[in-house]
Image (cartoon, rainbow, N blue to C red; front, side, top):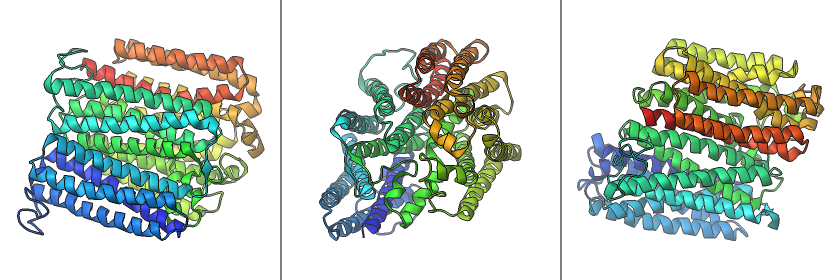
Length: 595
């Protein structure tokens, strides 16, 4: 019964997410008054479905579906025994739907009054957050409250989610008030760091300042997770996804200005902001509760064994979403710094889609090939394939399907050569790294890092059609980043790898050698980032950012070199994720600032 409820709640949550995105399309296209009356449209129940009317009417139709789903969630919740929290949350969702219906009507009849538009967005986000909490709570079912020692992190996670909600409202005001292009450059405004803060400019700059503050808070939350919550892998996973989405959101924010609020850019900006908000809400829920069985890499799906929804989540986990988000950041940044303002938003979107599909395919085949290793290691034995929740044949079919889709997207939207190169990179990762090197040599991570560095190189090639020195440096940066990142993890999980017979460097050469190698690669990494300033297209802003980020990276590497404590390895591993996202975001900021 609870499984059915969780599945229904998830459907309502996903549908609401799509509704919010469609609402963004309505706003971006100016379709909000295509139906000037409400609840009818141009005096009809079913108006002529063409042009802007089709967009607005589709939004209303999807909103009606969400309302019915919410009612079904309430009924289902009240049929559950002892589910007091779920009942209260479902009732809150129903109340918010009622408020949203009223606000939707008032928004139309008031000719899109700014504050009503903001209230409409705010209620939509509150409703969405309620469904996210409801779904996560239902899936965690049977868990216990986190110990008092985690109280500080719970407060931080809650503060971060709340602050992000406020930021979304500020962004909604900027959009509704027409201040989206009050500053035609980024990150400066009119060429100034602090322009005259009045009218639309003041609202626009306030949104940027608030975004910077919330960004710092998100990074601080991720750091706190890796420093204090290493015993709860689900928190680390969600924190990493939040950091990746933050980096992507920074890039999309710049694209909004660079492409003068193009529909694709603004819609992607809203979609990513909503996904980031949902991720932080999930983090706050997970910080409050410890799921039954301590969810690890298998994710929330382990809380609902045997259900269809759990099966869907298992397939999602095969793609390793954390890795995909980070790869998207490096790809998008590479394209933007290669040809700022000249690359079509649709080309960027299709490249990211094809890249995400290819990365998901690679990760799926990786887990398929390594299922025997995963079954032995405590960190991975709950993954879908070794746990028996997905058969090897099904995983193979899923991975192949993603790979084919990636090839088709790249071939149709870009060109055949790019599609072939992506297929080659996919084959290299699966056959050379996963099948051969991973079990053969302790240098597996070093050589396999070439596959992870390909998106940065590929993004540049797609944007310019050429292989240039800066593109090779971007490849080198990610290539040199990979060993410290994964060796830090392998130090922390050394016994796991030894038990599985995987010749990771700490197992074969010992911890002392590994710590020294991490330090050497870290020095080379920081040097390569500064090389991009000397011979590449980067300016002073990037150089300062790369230097500051690099100093922190080196400090953590030195700490690990001097100390064999597991905490030092966890800190470096966690920061390395933040480091890469911030470094590539700094590239975009620097390039657009000087464009």
